Length: 89
Image (cartoon, rainbow, N blue to C red):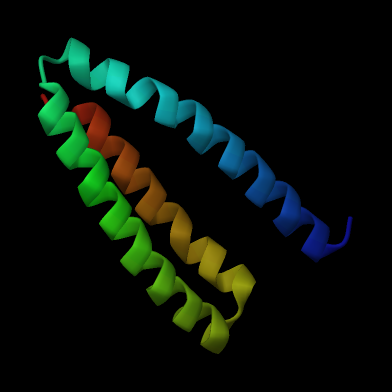
């Protein structure tokens, strides 16, 4: 498999996974007792972070390449999931 095809497959699976996670995050937050207004604020903050991260990632990808940028992205993705899941501990 060519490296560029692997990147496309990774991106496709990643987007599918985030779409599924995006469905269940509000349900999870409601079960934790958050109000709909707090969940809305979470999504507003998340959208702002994604916007500014996208701009930063674009600049980084222009300098170091797409493959290294994707490798740098994974720890941030893991940190986000850990923060959301283990926030109540």
